[in-house]
Length: 315
Image (cartoon, rainbow, N blue to C red; front, side):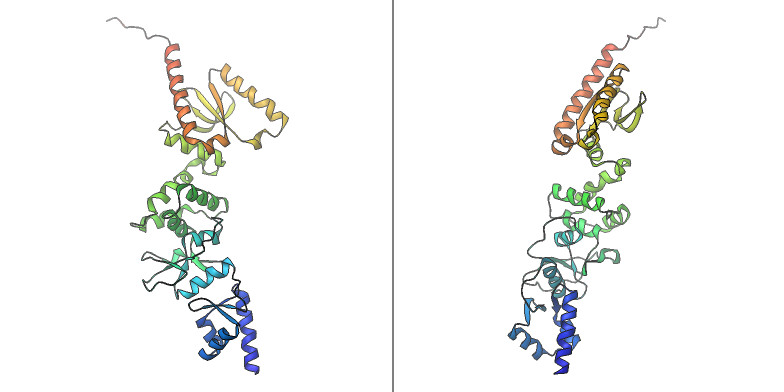
């Protein structure tokens, strides 16, 4: 009787640390026999969640519990991965109903789990967060890149950067050995923007630089001074400037009065300048890129018309 009370107490403590989930092997290590486990299932003390994984005392399992159960049922070396790992790291808001788990050795499928096999898992790909063995952030992003749409991938990369989880060095190392992984090229494209010197600037400026590249326009100078005015983007050959506006920079009366004056001073100095809102850059980058191309072409034509004719040199 005392042994049974002790076992129940230890089981409760273990389940409390593991979202109410314990594995078959953990029960054996605690001292439960196969017969005792069977009695626990029959009495309702243990609820089978997945093969070899049980809920203790109830079957109302949380998302964390389902993820942990999926990892436990897949055995040694199993890692939560793909969008399930993305959810655990906070890179996506959605936790899949069927947890994704990556294993190093190909084996049998498990009902209720989406199992993936990988031969390129290295020590740096292994991590643990919130008490669950999972793939590292770089590896998680790589796996997600093979499944989610571009918009979702870009949003997850941005969240990783905002949370301080985006480390380009380890990510590049992973991309080198990723071989034919289906997410390799898409992830490389998604993080290219974060290699830019504008990486530490505001999101709107990074997105602006990306739309400039996709529109096939020459790269402007960023955050430079023109006629004593700090400009977000400037094409020197065309003497054309762009200011990126976000609501947060116009919350004061002083800023509201100052910004149009800056544009006037640039125009008086012979610099054509326009303002583009951050909202438009995010919501319609292709349209903004097309219009910038037209404006730059018009500006070049204007400068050619106004330039003095070249003198002919007589020989």
